Length: 318
Image 1 (spheres, rainbow, N blue to C red):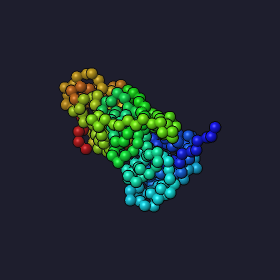
Image 2 (image 1 turned 180 degrees about the horizontal axis):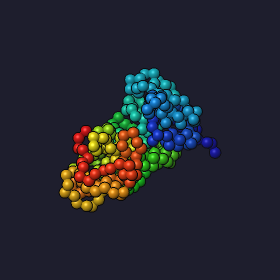
Image 3 (image 1 turned 45 degrees about the vertical axis):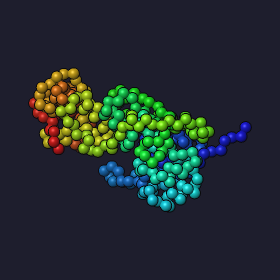
Image 4 (image 1 turned 90 degrees about the vertical axis):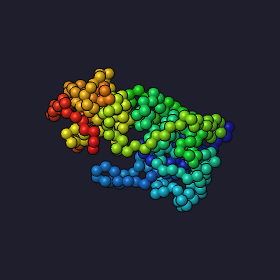
């Protein structure tokens, strides 16, 4: 029996989320002509130039890496891809919008590993938005790319319950799930046994990009919403407020079914269990915090060397 020839592929991705997809493609035995990732940047306090996670993994596998500053109107980059004549391009959290000439270049299409159950949460921050909205489930969708934002036909999905997971925990889970989904569907993509499913536009929602300012806690909102904000913005940028003029990041909290008539943001109780704060007419129990220059700690540990007074306020303004 004659063995099928390898697909000629290109992988495009940048952060840790995209690494399992690259591993899945590499382990499939198909040829990876290039790994395309964003340019290296200075990171952390030392401002040392660091490779992107996808670049590190690609070099480990012996894959040639391309890092164009831009992909639109970049003739040299397009000609490299065009001359390679890829059968398939796989994209996962690359971080740049691809122009039509790249999307339509491979004969089997350009596919994307997207971290949501499309058409819900198209866009830049699907995991965070799913947690913040209180969704019961999220997951990954393998989809064909087109010129719209995450609007292409779907190939397959896998879902997971959110429960009380943080966005950071979901990131790791969905990252691995994306690699599994790609591995499962590669044979179907190669053989053409794919049933394309169009997205229902009426069900589409947009996962807007997250900014640091989005982490500011509004204690007029109900505790359940604040608790989801805290989980949704873990590990970046983190939910925060101000106490005695100092920014305090809040990494853990619990919504209590305890009515509270104090002004929003008022500390109403302090114990080893946490700091109880008036929020939306109920009570939010803050359990894990971080002060500037320190690591995140349980409130019980913070109280061993610091006083937090009942009646004081978490400030509402920067």
